[in-house]
Amino acid sequence: MPFEPLVTAAIETTLNTLIQDDPDLVRRLSRLKGQVIQVHLKEFNKTLTFIFSQQIDVLAAYEGESNCYLSLNVSILPELREQANITQLIKQDKLVLEGDIQLAQKFAQLITDCKPDVEEWLSRLTGDVLAHALVQGVRDIGQALQSQRSKHQNHLSQVLTEEWRLLPSSLEVAYFCDQVDDLNSQAARIEAKIQHLLEQA
Image 1 (tube, rainbow, N blue to C red):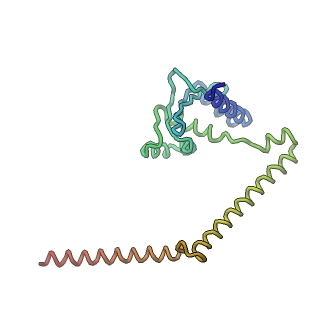
Image 2: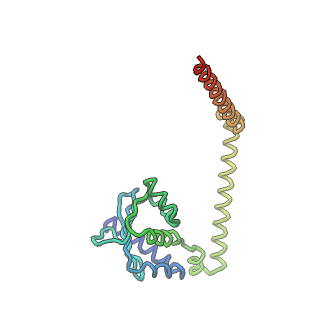
Image 3: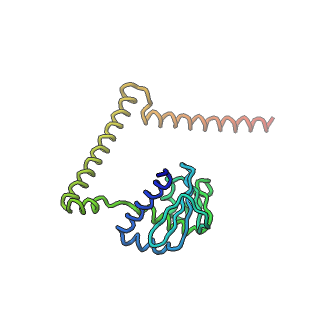
C-alpha cells in the first residue's frame, strides 16, 4: 500500500474514532457537514483535504473546490481557535487562509479537541478500577520523571554557575545589565553635553 493512502487512512480512522467517543464532538462535526477544508502542511509540503459528512473523509488528492484553504505548520493549529490569533498569524506569515475564517476556527477547535480518553478505552478492556489504577500510575510516573528532570536541571545550573564558574549567576547577569544601563545613561548625558557645547561654539 502506498504511503500517502496509509497516512490519510490512519488520520481519518483516528479522528472518526475520537469524535464518535465524544457526543459534543459529534454535534460539532454535524455543524461542519457538507464543508470541504484543505490544509497544506508546510513541514511535509503535503496538502490534505478534509470532507465533512456524517464522518470525516481525509484525502491526499482532491480535484474539487474547497470552502476553506489553510497553509500552516501543524504546531500553530491550536492557535486558530481564537480569531485574533488568526489575524496575527497571517501578519506574521505563519498562516495563509483563503475562505471563511469562522470555518477555519471551527475546524481547528474540532481537531484540537480530539483527544483520546485513554482511561475510557482501557476500561472497556480491563474494567474501570484497573483502568483508573493504570492511568493514575502512569500519571504519577510522569510527574516523578518531571520532578527528577527539574531537580537535575537545577543541579546542573548550580554546578555550572557556582562550582565550575563556567556561567554567570543570575545576580551577576542582573548586575552586569545594570552596569550596561548606567553606561548607556552616562553616554547619553555626555553626548547631550557635547551637543550643547557645539551649539554654543
